[in-house]
Amino acid sequence: MDISNTQSLYIVALIAIPAAFVGMGMFMIVRAYLRRDENLRLLELRMATNKETRLLKLQAYERMALFLERISPAAVISRVMDPDMVNHELQLAIIRNIRSEFEHNLSQQIYISSDAWNLIVSAKDELIKATGMIAQQVSPDTAAPQVARIILESIANSGQMLPTQTALEFLKNEARELL
Image (cartoon, rainbow, N blue to C red):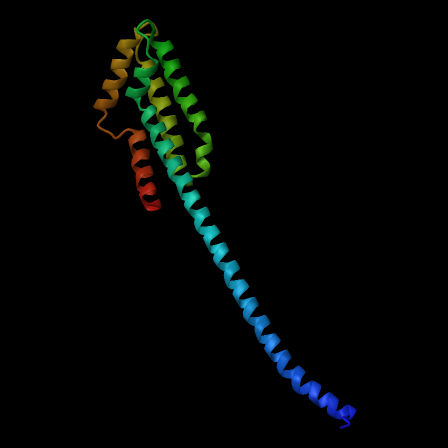
């Protein structure tokens, strides 16, 4: 039985064409599977990254809430006041402490909103300004305990919410949105 070249080509084509279709189909199935697998891995990575980022943001909000609590007038005064101090020494100690606390937390601005950061900076600046204004109303030689009492009474009698409290409420609301 002699098979001619044409018949050989015909037989090869009968075998090769379906094999090519099967091979192409397998290639497409494997490629789709690999793409799906890659997309799932990317999704898992994004979810893990989002979880870590959310955790970092929450930690930043916690640190800034702590900062605001630490720079509240009563907290600062109780930390820095020495009964032997006089007015200007207490004023400087309060301002130094507030600035030191602020500088310690500067990096947190990366993780919180610009609005929250601006409120925090404003609260810090307003407390420094208020402390200076109240301290200027009394003699430079006035004893620190008396100056502290005047500062705390002045704030208590103002009838206004402290800037730290305003900023803290804003932070709490933003943090709740992250949860």
